[in-house]
Image 1 (cartoon, rainbow, N blue to C red):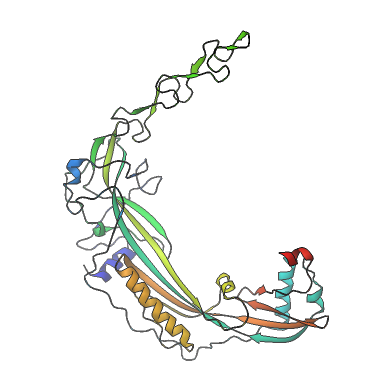
Image 2 (cartoon, one colour):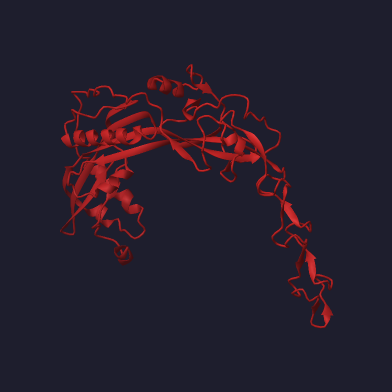
Length: 390
């Protein structure tokens, strides 16, 4: 089947190819479908059905990841051109903005004095802009396993047709680049069997009273008396009606919900995952690079395709090299295990200003970084002793 055709069908839930039929997602409280949650392998399928589902022979109760049926490895298009007139640098922020950012930062700290902000003298503001490369690979994986729900009269279709293959079932793709999971009952795989937990009775022995319906009185420990008088809790009997089963000696079976029968079928689990790779060029500014994961920058380049081509002509060659490595690794890693639906790579320019200032004849440094103008400093000169300990 042509891969590009499959992708277009996934993007448009109303579309379907000649060999891909649309089946409804089993709806319900578990995003799976029926009014009862699917049993994930709590019971084995009927033996006669297990051997008569072509393509699913010998499948057990554990989920099996299934590689997509690619006819041949897809090839990405050529590199996306960049704007030749693009400005790749941002100047340092102004002294006024640097002071406002530091004041906001200090105000958020209970033990920081505002005096250095009010009295400091700027000596230098240096621009140390850096680049962040991101690669997102949005994948779809599928697995199958036997499942069951209480039988309440649902349609049993195990002998009504040929079961479609796991990748022949068209499941609409949710929001792109966001993790999600859906579960579908595969058509023509269902059959009814007696509940294995209660032996089709619909009820299970009560474990509290061991099927007797009565429990020992906790007040008198079953004696029936307290000191020289009769126990008022059990009226001298030494036993009370079991509150767990209401004296019946049995409880409703949790597996079949009292129905005595189970509808067994093959469950298809579809998982969408956004696999993210990020790399920040360390410009040796002094700002810890891990702080940059918390801020945004200015997007200089964005490329979204079913398969992206590595960046080749960015001014900073470190970005070109890491893009080549990341794209090749993602495509090699995910192509054999799941379906790659879309890839997106971006390059952001993250502004960093290193601010030098003096206060009380001593020089200090802080950083203002990101579009949010976050502040980082490890030598603020006016904080109490408890802050120094922290």
